[in-house]
Amino acid sequence: MAQSTAQSVLAETTVVDTDVHMTVSEEEIAEYMDEPYSYSITDSPHELFPSSSWDQRMGGKIEDNFSDFTEAEDITKFQEEFHIDHPIINTFEPLGKFSQPDLAMELMRAYNRLLLDKYLDDHDFLGLAAVATQKPHEAAEEIDRIGSEDQVVGLYIGSSGEYPPLGDPRYDPIYEAAEDNDLPIAFHGNAEEFMFDFPTQNRGFNKFFEVHSVGHTWQQMMTLTSVIAEGLPVKFPDLDWVFLEAGYGWVPYMMHRMNKIYHMRRSEVPLLDKSPEKYIRESCYFANQPLGEPERPEDMAKMLEIMGTDNIMFATDYPHWDFDALEELDKYLQHYFTDEERQRVLHDNAVEAFHLDV
Image 1 (tube, helix red, strand yellow):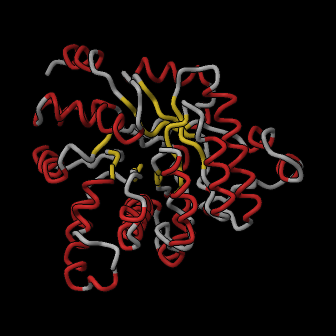
Image 2: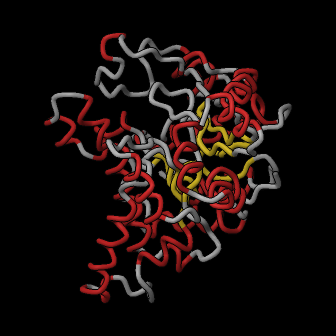
């Protein structure tokens, strides 16, 4: 398809982007925090957010525009350039890595105040509210507080740095509040927090190439396994589970692997009365980003076919340096799939999962 024709088709397509990151500095988030937490940020000579210690920019060879994507006007420019009609934005660091529970909870509230004040109240955007899991009952109170905001369409939980894994019953108050407020859970992976989940591997690897290849996927594999094994789709049947920034190539393996274990060890998962694959297909969604790059394009089509188009939703992960433009996925959708299947991936699945009126 010629470039001009492809651009024309994209311009005529209604697209929901389920993962757009706004950059928030420590100084800015401190303005939305109560004392003594804001004081500890603004008067500290050290960064509050721990560094992964990896050279992610390859000594400056990789250009990073993440630090410049800070204003609501930047979203509008992004929409125009990349043919995105409805961006779902988030603004926050994964909060599970913070060892101080009170600090994590205050950051949660501050990020949500900032999200509403700066990006949602005066703009026609959609957003994911931050959830810190260190104090589940306190997190549930925050969900109840923010749940009535029309532009808040889901809850963002970093699947990195969380202990115990996110299916554990201790988090049930969070999921109960999410279900009560009709807000899906969006789990988000993060390579920088690989050191918290897999410290031995983090110290054993020699290159960020290795961490970046497996970090997001391992975190989401762990989270999906915990969610299914602990029976969350049974305990919270009206709640949808969205997995961001790990792609979907790993999902067929996990569905089939858990099916096998389920048939051998059903007594260990008494809440499940059908196969893990059925629960995953009924209640879980997976964003395409980061999209793999097979040597043979038909292999991507086969992967999409195995997954089916009912559980995949579109995401760019903009403005991270490894984001995927819409054209990367759409070239497969246009070539191998029907218009209806394409619309499900680019629009309908997100509308269904996040209960959007768009």
